[in-house]
Amino acid sequence: MFAPDLITLAETVVARAQARRWMLATAESCTGGLVAALITSVAGSSAVLEQGAVTYSNAAKTRMLDVPVALIEAYGAVSQPVAEAMAAGARARAGVDLAVSITGIAGPGGGSTEKPVGLVHFGLATADGVRHLERRFGEEDRQAIRLAATEQALQLLLEGLA
Image (cartoon, rainbow, N blue to C red; front, side, top):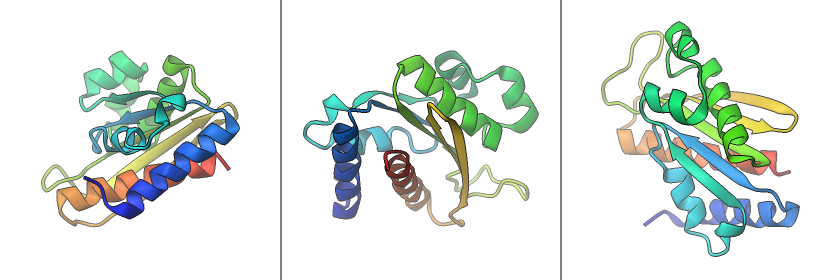
């Protein structure tokens, strides 16, 4: 179902989380649950993945992750503040050690000059706070952007587990 390199990356995330005895959560928008799906494709992942939330709509971000409506209205769903709030909300709601969030524009439509197709914001929440990463994957096709964002989210989890 997934490319071997993505499965290997997910296996490494699971192994590191097991070694640290950390629990993980995901909060995904444009990736639609691909990060959680890759993690759960690894045997033994139930020992490290508490939950994954697909919060595609703004209402879901607010309802499931406690992202303030005012934050979404001020910055838009695809923004640094919302990605950070998603990660923090996922970590707090799930009661885990580490949470990653992804919100972006996978296209082919929906982009603008300020927020083009391929723009993705990530959040990584730990006990020490929330880290943000912005990536612009270019105007590739929708699936390529989603897979690139999924890979980046797994890489962020690895960094958080280092």
